[in-house]
Image 1 (cartoon, rainbow, N blue to C red):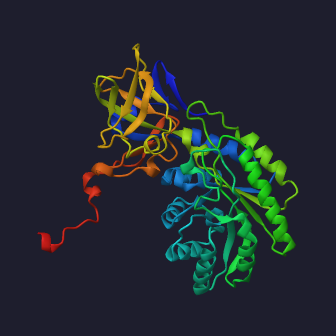
Image 2 (cartoon, rainbow, N blue to C red; image 1 turned 90 degrees about the vertical axis):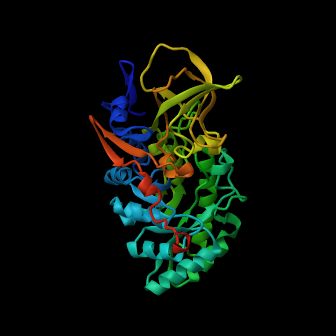
Image 3 (cartoon, rainbow, N blue to C red; image 1 turned 180 degrees about the horizontal axis):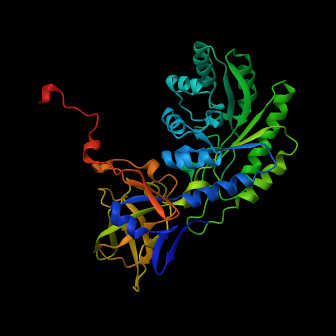
Length: 418
């Protein structure tokens, strides 16, 4: 469910016409619906009602402070993978006792900052990381709360670039090596072993890979208990997919029901790290048509947003729906929706049937709330776009469009070149 809909042929976000926002802030821009975000969080959280759990939003999906604050007010924590994401979460008012820190490359300063903040859990991803966190915690006179992120060697049946649970992926500790690393973690004086974690991938549209991973984690937990290592937290990660095109992902209640059913005999607190499933369909990218062009064999619709603004189509071949902001009677054409970036891979939709847009028209690129702005860049010296949040009948600029001055912030020309 989302709150983007047509009224009298014009696209609205909740109670605000998208065209009116574009007239005020210019294009391109990301546009989010607060009502959609809140609804998605309540549905996901409610899917685990009756079982102890913490929902930690995956900040990598969308790190805007207003988005994080909105979710934190609903009760969400944060799943972070960098010191910058920790800073964002804390600035947004996320309870540090609901922050889990994953990621294969935590630096000493990032570990220190997280320990000082008092986060819930470090999800450690290698044997050497055990030693590194123990050293940092020792210097601070603290015990670091840790879980080991297990790689269960599960095929999540998703795009290979966003699969994270196979042996060949860089993430986590091989499940066959886990007992040895848990024994070592227990011996280190500045670690407190509290949990088991895993994350098998993103945009997963079947429940079965999650259940299979959970079964393997339960076997590991039983073996750890035999060793006298009590597990308080089970972090199952995120990865539940959404509909971009024809996908049929499970409803969160189906997903939650099957997970909880498998956990009834365990006395643990479940940690979940949803990202895309909360914010993906709560946001769109609004862009304007600059030109149309026929190459003799192809039809191009050239817009003012490009692969630097939304990388997913170029990076993964991902599908995003293309909607007119104002519906008109017009033919449909087979075309590619492309941007101004100097790369042949710069497209938002490729060789698709779509309305025959004309210069000056507004186009909504749908399902762009996750991994949209957060993956954007300044390639071709393009300022990053504005972000807008709608609440009922009002809209708010939650990130201003970058300026050319900001593009060169921090750069300098040495005296020898002046």
